[in-house]
Length: 328
Image 1: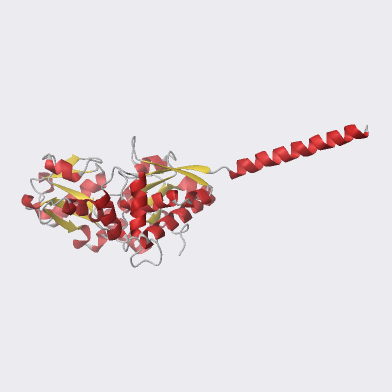
Image 2: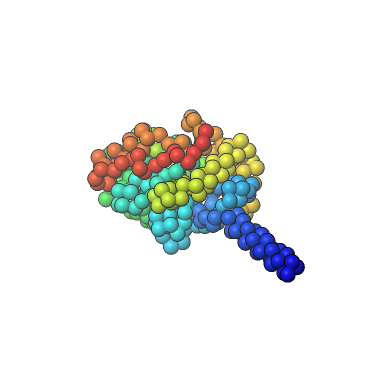
């Protein structure tokens, strides 16, 4: 009888230990997270790849998969929680929220707008007044088309005389060589550098040359309100790791560039290295810390969109972005 009691007690202990180990294993399983890019991999995304490669996400208990948008935009995928995080732009977030899409900007990837319009110099495009009779190649968004037409109007050009062509993720240089487009809206830190490295004779002018209102946050990292309100711990862990990745890219541009090339070997090495060096002091610039977003910047651009009829109704910019998950 005594032996039976010992055996039973031993079985109970073994069962309890087994259950405890099983429970511990479950709690240590990483949360699966999908991050959707806005376009093909480039140096706007380097901090995410650094966080993946350096194990920052893994240390935070996250299993992160980086994908490119296939069916739908990054904003649509994040709003539907098909992807928990993604890359967007302040103008897209503002426009999406005005249409009732519950997405929120969690951080500015770059502090100032480094985008502008590029064309082959032979086209003679020196500003929006020269867009008449030209073919614009873009991503196909409404706010993008509205901005092009607005700039034309403000510079005395007839917006009905520009042809809008959707390029999607097709490279501008390839589309231009094929005669499909005459100019495009690009990031100076990528396409402009690429064009110059390849020896193209191009003209370029910055968006911010025309108004301070265009010095908004582009790109940004977004999430859905559903996750921000209901899964703060996961959002916080992701953003802490992402912040660490971008700060690493600021301090170690060449190593960060090599990491991006590791995950996207199809990219041109010279372009990635030059672009990463260009962005190193632009990720944070004059902000107190990486990712910081100023409400005045959001208000200024939102007011402009409202004044020009691009959006309607009362839009609370305080709900369009948050700095809650960032650290200095």
